[in-house]
Image (cartoon, rainbow, N blue to C red; front, top):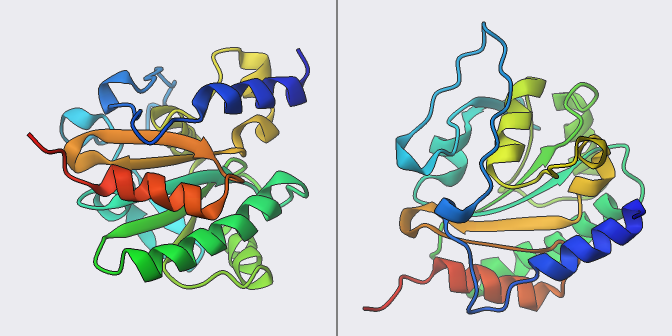
Length: 211
């Protein structure tokens, strides 16, 4: 199967209807080899790592505390040198951000993008990318130590169990993870789905279940 065929099949399988979302319990959790000197703290049973990362503004953040806890996470993977899917996804998600700001004014929606290539994508590289694409404030582009970036990527489901495919950065840039950790409601959509469709998923994930 070619990479293009794989991406098409992945997107076909991961497009959720508005009534079909995954829980954290069903998210793939694959162990990632860690450096002996790297401390990897976890927060609660959700298993989302509370590791230190850097934003494009040079701010050090704790991933769980600052991006996930008590928020609606909207996250994709990208890398600065990506010339195809990443700029298209960024342009599409800018429209999503604008719609969210109009339709979900009081909702704590956190948009963030994590580089798949932290060795090259430094804070200055990400900062240049944000300026180049005129990305509005409130959207965090993140980098960090490669093993910590990989841990976050795996725990959020941006991986393939086939190492040969997982090692190709382009295979991780086409999907968007949307989650509400407070009520364990998570979904995934293509980054280039229609903005209105993405916002409907965000609204759905943000909504508390009725009993």
